[in-house]
Image 1 (cartoon, rainbow, N blue to C red):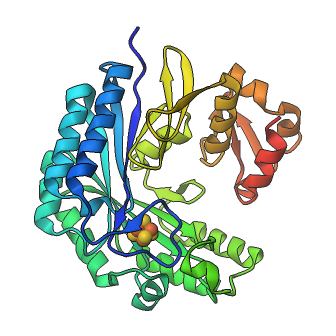
Image 2 (tube, rainbow, N blue to C red; image 1 turned 30 degrees about the vertical axis):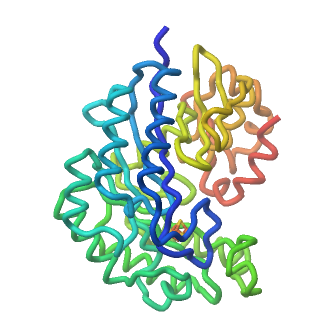
Length: 352
Ligand code: SF4
């Protein structure tokens, strides 16, 4: 039996330095051991090749950390190893998360010729003071230059931003949206700053905006950004959504490769949870997987398809009796705009 297509996530855990808010699995490293990293990643890919057979790969996402720090030779070897084990489609989406000032035009051009077709840039802000406060090691100009490079190379480009810093007002966020609009992006992600334990911000007792202020900023983004929202924090022109994330949110299988990368693989009609270490994965029931699918699917404006397995794990009566929060159309269930603002509460009530 041939297994179904799987998306691939590859984690690159190295950064130039650690940002003040960051709790991702990444560490500052001046000279990563790229040879060891590459060998480990390729060994994992070969392992999955044997396990899953010659399946199709709709998307590959290099996340981090800072994948743009990867030497071209490492990127090339990883892509070739994937090609040796699996089938790529003509339009397989290959995204590389990149930070300004970590990749120059020539390297970006090489990444493109090897297969990268989408660059997700960690810009975070177009204001140098805010960048400094966040502990970013690049300037707004560095970011503009990287966008210029990706445009010149005709690469699909996305950019990440952070809002809701201490003292932020709705006016600040409207200005931020106007600046973002001027970049002419087809995709961007705007994340609310959250203070995590174990980060420099976690020790600073920062006075953060209240929940109401955050909600006002969130609504201001939807009104002022010229890209429509398609997930809680993601905005795109129609047809430019991130295929990789969309597939993961839709509950499609994905392999996590690299230290700290999680996955959900589907072998011979059985779901497995793969957490952190590729050789350790555990069977999960169809209903557990369906609950995960509801949790991620409800984050998107398309919601989830109401299959029998999904119907078995949700409280349909509650959903039907809350039309201001939940909409049910064409055998799909999704949150309304109002519901999107209280997603956690919705999930608690919706999932049985
Ligand atoms: S560059 Fe990204 S992954 Fe690295 S420390 Fe900063 S936020 Fe974290």
